[in-house]
Length: 112
Length: 115
Image (cartoon, rainbow over all chains, first blue to last red; front, side):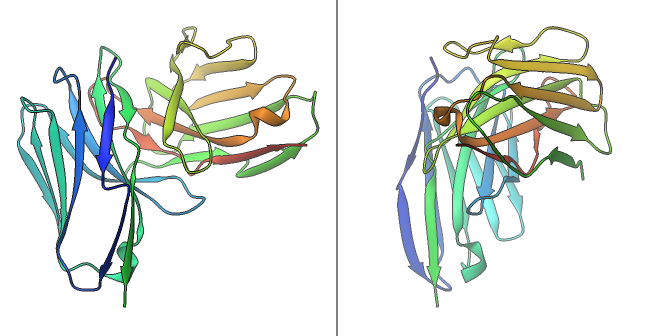
């Protein structure tokens, strides 16, 4: 059974700092990995999707990497802003239906 | 980008009643839709996977007679919580995919409160 863990569970940084969120998974047989953002009481916003054959994806200030063999992914956020404050979830897609297994999330607070 | 809507966004119902939640893909055909449940301060847990025109596949521990899923068209799936109880109170989120290995697009979620 796939298990997805995210570290740290919570993180507070001052505005402008670069930061890294970590995601690890136990079964390396995956189709893809997605990073999402969730604001309190809201649904999910997809940030980046990495296919199993890819090693990284970039969108604006975000960069996500994938190392399948070691079961790890990182989300790098450059020049953090207060608007980046949210919970970040990684999810691993596997199986014939590409079912997603979600991580436990990292609550990010970017302070002024 | 692909848009998925859910209706209602919030619902309060009395214990013992049934509640239907709709999930629609607005600008693409969703061959597969997924239903998730999220308890406060916890991550999303997959409840079931539904393919258009087929019976849903439920995850272990999810009662199929309690959580009825219908995926009658390529743009609509419904989740009916039957005989709801307070422990069913949760945030229910659907997602839709146009391809088995493609990105899943998530709806905004439905907050269900059972009193």
